[in-house]
Image (cartoon, rainbow, N blue to C red; front, side, top):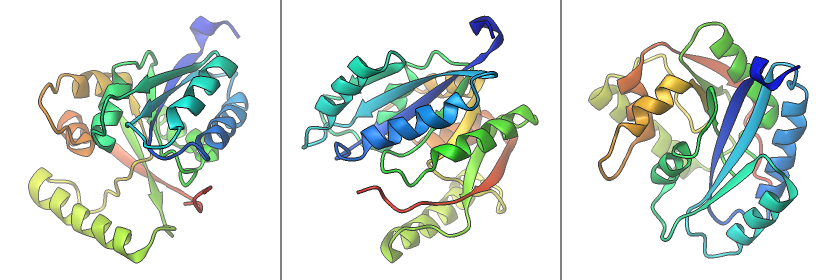
Length: 207
């Protein structure tokens, strides 16, 4: 199919200490997106958040190996949300997908997020029935959820995660934020309430 007939999906991944994992994550994404290539083209934007290991060296190699990968290297560690925003500035696509660098957000579920957008939602968040995180991180997620409800008016039945898809206008709205310390979930809630969940499997870390 002609490129102009296929939507471009921009997949943004913040990377930190992921030298051993990110190559496998990229391979998984390319394999799954090839199954959808009749409808979609895709690019992958890897943002190195000043990793102390050789993550950016691996990203450089991936950029040489694949023509659809863009690498971004931050001068110091700014944190996940700032790394995502740096990636958003490189997005060319009609659709944004954000996911993690550790393989726990499964590439095969991208199709489910995209389907949610096709059905009319502006943003689709992955919802995990069984999260493969330790107890401390799960506790932090529950505290974060309570703060979102109280401070940002998040609907009680909406589950938010780092694995989500959004329409292009959501990216444009988030990029209007010019202040320090961006909070991506808050920027999404400020842009739209037309949000849904799809249930996906949460996988074990690749390393």
